[in-house]
Image (tube, rainbow, N blue to C red; front, side, top):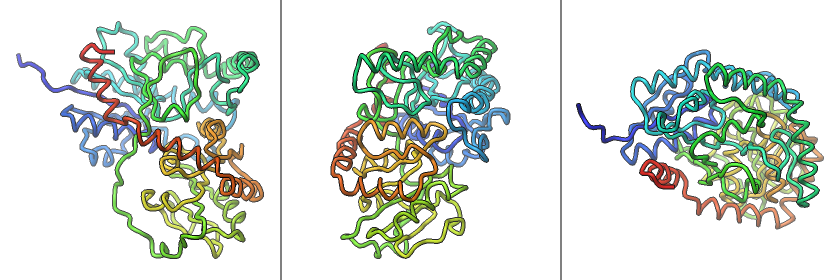
Length: 429
């Protein structure tokens, strides 16, 4: 019988671009260090996974649904979180868990990495630690663990600066959230029972994530709420993949004058079916301002964009390493990856997000001081104009973004995460 010498990792990602991308960055680093790496996700990401040099494993169709959930109407507010959590994350968990068990039966893994929404790993926690792989939760979005020091996840409320008053307020909010989110909690408890995993036991639904052995958050401490209780988060900075292709400069690039501020606006690669949400009000707001506006369509056809004013330029995609050093303000609906790209380059942010986890990214932009939150996903042109002028004229926003950017540059990234995992396997802390 041969002796196993190569470490093996199973990476589990929900099938969405903002989930798969960071997980492939982790997978690349594992493979670079000689690990065998399998990445379990949706079928449409096979090429992306294999292009990263990783082995692709497909989710069953019943679990390969996240890309299509809410395609017509994204979830907004606490009332819709109940439906969204069950449809997007709880319902796929049972078939996803069966696939995880199948892959581990084919070849055991030393470590299972999972993005924070991949509940199919919960079946692993039905076993004692010595009978299962090391598990690593990968925080690809804002941390949602409950705490006496913060309001409940999903409300977009920033922690209070007054400790005693804040704790009183947050205790009341947390009790209310448990009642409002009762259906989501009951659905998750039912799922955990069917998986044979420990129940919530009265905990907040996001606290199910703290069962993993390592809680890896893909940001820096300056962009996440501090807490004096709850699980220990380890910060590794954003997981940024190398560009998939050399985009080069667009034909209009030389028309961006160095003496005129550049404002970049995007709705990302997911919420790019209705440009009236953010792109259109931004173009209207800035049409007569002394700025150059650069809009990216997130891969959508440029014909879907609203009419472009004279000071506006567009492309389906742009190389952020080319664009962001020239950018003076970033207008976004709040994707976690895009925010970190902006802060890495010290660009102040105007954020307009009220769906999915974007209500929480918006709150963190406001709390950190890196920009202005418009507190809606459909801002008026007047609100956009006021916010853009504020971040352009008040130097504190850019200074904070640069400070966070320096922390991002100093973060250990995927090499630091894999180092800590290897130390844990050797019996270290």
